[in-house]
Length: 234
Image (cartoon, rainbow, N blue to C red; front, side, top):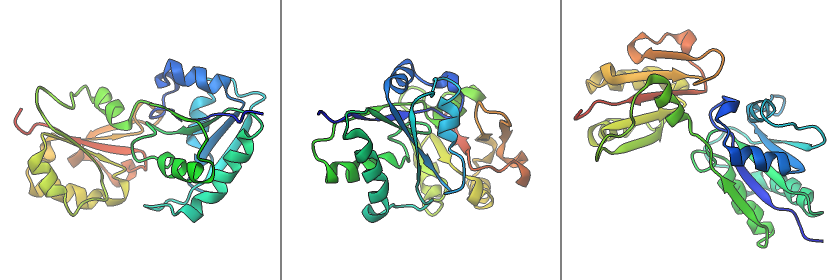
């Protein structure tokens, strides 16, 4: 029997209407859906998004826990890889759903390495999704790049090189800023870029917050947050 195919499907930033037509088609056609969770006892936001756009009745739902660490070791990924391989071996197609786009700060490409290590013949396809950065830019009505401008997309935890990045790029998008917000705010003040910095939290979701960075309060901070800094040279 031919084994099933694995799809990595980008679910977008949260609004189910931002799922692509291809993503909806693939999710509808797969017999199994795998979703990541940050906590063993937590709920999967990715599952909540696609469940509002696709009928999941009759599909096998596989919840995979991935620790919230910078780099997942092959050993840590082996249990998830084996569960996926066990699911597709009977011909069932499986969609692994990620928030945003699978190619940007996603667990999937680490997992893909593990899957292909254990089964080099496995067929894997990536279905791109709308990113939190582009969704945030749309919500604030701001262009990320004009003419020949350069864009930098970096995790906010990379504060050590942030001043240099702000100097070299006309647009900088900082992702997941909640845990280092005071440090980021201080750097923006020191570099004179804070007036051009907008904080977007939960873009397109319930509880969305859009504020200038200098107006953000502690209660506004959330894991699903992005700061976009534009204006250099404009």
